[in-house]
Length: 68
Image (cartoon, rainbow, N blue to C red):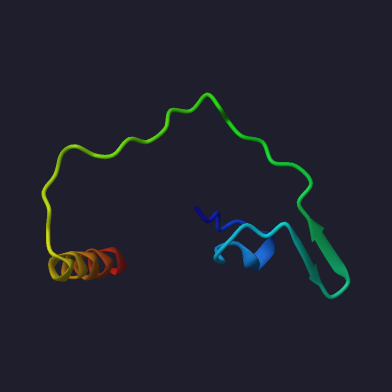
């Protein structure tokens, strides 16, 4: 599992950034806290199976509706 977190504009990359030097600045991860009280997400047991083609169309339509 990849965690796309990091400082500044580097958040969203393919993994957790634990150290980064940007010119004169140094970003260093010094602590990670885990919330152990949260429930794990379980696999859905409802819904319907659709094809990859229909999924892409649905995703495209939803994106266009969001932009409007």
